[in-house]
Image (cartoon, rainbow, N blue to C red):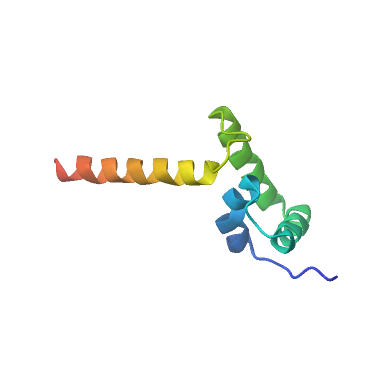
Length: 85
């Protein structure tokens, strides 16, 4: 089966799902082929994986959702701080 190429932007959108193993086998195959050919996206993957590991998220189910909730909370706090000025 031929692997359909995937863009860097698509890889970046799915990188958390990839690490969480919440993607289809076809998407995993596309992303792995992309990582073999793209040093930049491989560095993003390594950096994201390291970031997760530093926070103890390795192997944590739903880590992507936890990460998104933390980002949302941080952005809300940032908005509140800006409105206090």
